[in-house]
Amino acid sequence: MEYRYLIVDDEVLIRRGIRNRIDSIKSLSLVCVGEASNGEKAKEIIADKKPDIIITDMKMAKVDGVELLNYLEKNAPDSAVIVASGYTDFAYVSKALEKRVIGYLLKPFSAAEIEEQLKKAVQSIEQRKSLQELKRRVVSFEEKFEQFKLLEIMMEPWSGDVERELADKNYVMDYFHLLISISTNDETVEPLVRERCLTLLKGIQGVVLNNPSNKFQFFVILTAEGEENREKLSVQASRMAMEVKRCVQGRKAFVCISNVFQGFSQLNRNYQRNEELLGRISLRDTVGIFRAAQEVYEPKEIAPANEVKDMFRMIKHNYAEADNLCGAFFEKIDPESHLIGDIRRYCDVLIECVNQYADQKGVETDNVMEIFVKRYIYCDDTEKMEREITGYVKLVMDSIRMKSNDEEYMFDQMKRYIVENFDKKLTLQVLADHFYMSPNACSEILKQKMNISFNDFLKEIRIGKAKELLDTTELSAEKISEEIGYANAKYFFKIFKKETGSTPSEYRNRKK
Image 1 (cartoon, rainbow, N blue to C red):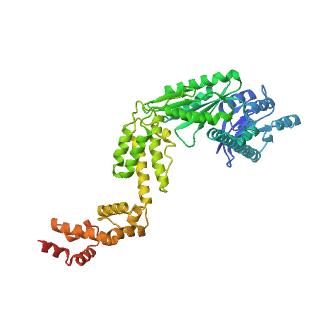
Image 2 (cartoon, one colour):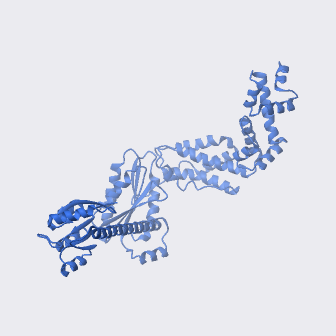
Image 3 (cartoon, helix red, strand yellow):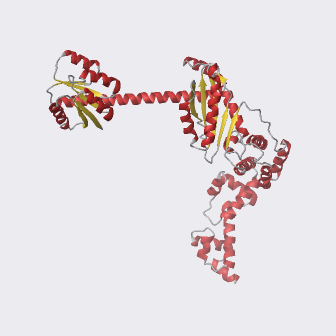
């Protein structure tokens, strides 16, 4: 690494001599950024060049070494200072030691002596950098810890343990707070909000927290001390919301603003309230600002619950129509008039029917409605919603049928798969992997339904296709072997003769 140094001495020849000695040092990478004849000139160079190392005389005109050391202590505390003086007066030495200089050289000195002092200076610089980096990491860790603790308080119900932990850390429990939840797929919004937190109203503090479980959401907690600053929290929140509204460029952003509350014990409750506010979003909305102080929204019923349950019963008894039935289910949703909270309640009835039926059959389910609002607030219509909800319904119903040992259904699926893929490299293991079953289970189902093994069934299909190609095409027997999935033509000839009593050529000629 390269280190920059400054020489301060009122004798030009001494300055040149020091520089020549330093230039002869090969063990360090050192660059001179200037020479100063007095302390006043040194101050100008230090302010401009910010040298790492300063080598200075103690007795100079205008501003002497002692005064320069005082200046450096306040204005360049990270610079390493080496005092080089021809004076042995103890007063000068003691002053230098008071200012914690790195080294003291008595003129005249050798290149080896100054090299030793410069190495000490470099070591001091590196130690200071390491210490600063360590402090930075500690501060960063503490900040992350505090943010993690705030997120924990916000997303988990309040408890006595949390209260005691905050009390131990000397948190003030009676400050006023306001929570802003911002959901957006516009990546320019968060930096803007963070910048806004640097210019808060007087008496207001703010912290920005990212939601670790949702990359499209972050939070702002505004804090104020004293009743006189309470109103400022709402004013500041409104300013931030309008700033977000102005900056969104063609993407979506939704701002939910809580009521002002006192103490962290109310943080989780206000977080939950803000999450409920997201239900007021329309799929056609681009930007929305929602306040907890607004009147409670009265949900609209898209269809009666009994109607949805009847539709699910139809899916149970006529699974082949699942796509059409789910399509009719989603046709009732109007993206213009139904808010996402209404749509969630409507879909929740269907998913509850599906999950209850799965529970009865011992099939695992997923709580797909838990993230429904967060997943679909950035959609403009119900297309994605319909595709994914329908997919979940069919997946669970398929699992129920498999769990119920519906061998007839599994046999139909296996038979279809074999018929459609007989010309590929097909084995019992491949079949088992495709249907997430063991090879033995697949083999048993085929034997029970057809009274033949997998290999015999596959052979029947292939030989049947070979006969068809021999009857209707001029393809060679070798080519037909490839077409029906036999890579080895000789093996195909052997199997064909065993099954038909003749070779492929004899079969074709006899037919002709």
